[in-house]
Amino acid sequence: PVSAYAHFGKGKGIRFGGWINAIIPILIVPYYSVIGGWVIHYLAEYLCGRGSNLAADGYFSGFITNGLQAELAFLLFSLFTLGIIFAGVRNGVERVSKVMMPVLVVLSLVIAGYSVTRPGALAGVKYFLVPNLKNFSWMTVVTAMGQMFYSLSIAMGILVTFGSYMKKDVSIEESTENVEVFDTAIAIMAGLMIIPAVFAFSGGDPDTLQAGPALMFITIPKVFASMGLGTVVGVLFFVLVLFAAITSSIALTESAVSTFEDELGWDRTRSTVLIGAIMVALGSLSALGYGPLAEVTVFGMQFLDFFDFLTNSVMMPIAAIATCLLVSRVIGVEQIAQEVEQDGQRFRRKPVFNFMIRWLCPIFAAIILASSVANAFGWIAM
Image (cartoon, rainbow, N blue to C red; front, top):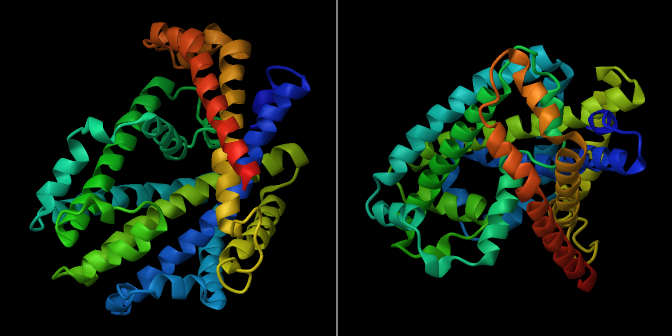
């Protein structure tokens, strides 16, 4: 990301945009790996036939406050990610993704099919897919934008990193269309996996659809415990979540490693060791933050919550503004068109892209800026 931004100018402002895109994944992947460790622990419990324990009240809080269990699960997830990154792009990242992605899609279809056929699940399908304007507000748009950032890996250097690995004869437009189709399809399947099942379990109460860890690690195990094939579905579900978590952590870690390789001139081994050390140091703070380090907070937040707030609500909006300004004010439509047309095909979306860059990018940047300022004031108030 740093080199990509610097390519279009030597000013400090442009390089700052590259650096903030590069630093974000370095800060995200440690606490993301902690959550990945939680997934490994839950999967292991289901595989050992102890799924009913996971549905017990207080199990999740008891687990994350147990410093040793949380730390070991985090380290296991981190080592698996780093091993894939150490193997390289072709032998590690590409080979693992080719296996995990199809398996993820198949598991999504199986679990979604099982979920929507539960008694009372159709009410959840209706709640999920039928628009209700009473639930719509300005915060709906802001929340959707935040989800879009994570779902599409925007403003965290990942698109820049993997884009640099694309061969010149690969169609950028066709690749974009694949992302649009599969990202949206997987998102819909994720909703069909979870929302109908929760509705069936709760008797149609939408208040049980809590956001964040409560849904994944408290509500969902209770749902599976109420099913006839709960253990089997639990295993499949957490295998799917683990695959999704690993592919995401690979992308975040690869972006960080590529930055160290490019900017420090290091080889992959040294760069992987460095990001590994950062992951262990920062990730251990997050893993132990609800247990042995519970009394230590940053602005009143536990370490994991702080890193999440810092990257998601403060740094990513700034990185997005930098990207908007780079694309709309520095690169321009014509340079983008030249890049898109390198494979010999016409840039079919050029008129749409031209409109977006000239008019929507500044508006988008202004919205992000307003959201970022509001978050910053909220942070200061805390």
